[in-house]
Image 1 (cartoon, rainbow, N blue to C red):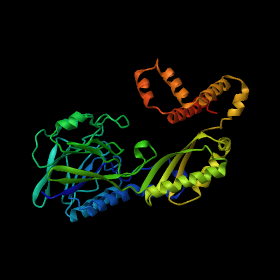
Image 2 (image 1 turned 90 degrees about the vertical axis):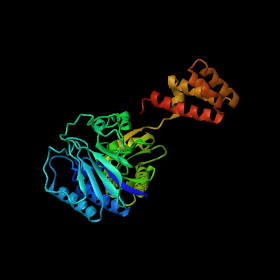
Image 3 (image 1 turned 90 degrees about the horizontal axis):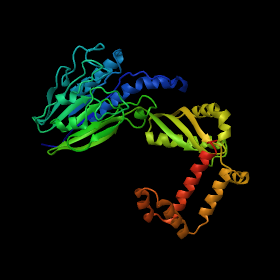
Image 4 (image 1 turned 45 degrees about the vertical axis):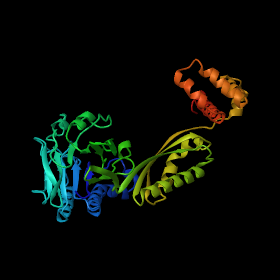
Length: 417
């Protein structure tokens, strides 16, 4: 059997409503409204560009029962384009687009499209060079609140060179997502499946790397700054050879990207310097996005002189960043900074913090052998793990640990202010 490939995508959420981002200006809402549809177009084109024999869609094609006409027609047009090029499409419904909810503007799918029903696990072949190269097994949700373990319904006996399970489910108990069609990794391993094409979890993840390979490709287009929605989004390209699943590769297909960053303000003297540092951060984010529009949230951390200015200048700084234009849109700045610590002033106070600094100075002035001996004496009554780490500890590392410990202790003693 020659090497062949398919593309696995999930959670398209076509025509998804983006809320809470109108503050970014008049251009962004329109851009976001089109993002999921343009990402679908990118998926169709990537499937063709990579010479894939099939496209597998693991549920949540739409965002909810109120499926817009333009989303349905755009989806149908993409399927038609794939059909005209001989690409098979297999799809199941998930909790956002179950069979029993919503309406359809499409009377029949184009030729070569298989939608699996909700009553039982159904099967259909992928044919390569006139021979059955794989068999796809899938089942849709009948209703949104599907809590049955659907993975246990998949076949336990092999009937094709490669078997693929198409399933929308919370496999492995991900706490960030609702427990729809929950199943364990052992449930996945028990079925006669070589590749689990999963949907529902929006963060890209390979649950099982070996047979059976189990993959969440993640949402096709990020929708918010939530952790599972940030970073590159797209689909998974799967290579198959005579031995089975040979390779999986991520295909970034998103149009708009959400990113979160942290910036330490230590060493930044004033608001102008902070603006420049944030502009540099934006430039790096834009380069990583390779021409995509990026919506950024940043958290400012650390101790620095600019802390005091941020108390009354944050909104003005954010407005200034938004006026810079370009492909980076600033959504939010969160301040988690603190005023710099004046060690000399603390030493003059004569309080507990001053005593702590004096003791830290005494330890710092020890020679290397004395410092390591002091640490060993401290560690002796501690747990075994701590004692085992010490013989490999050199003086340079010990002094770095001392510096970090002093900084953290002063942060706590000074109340983070």
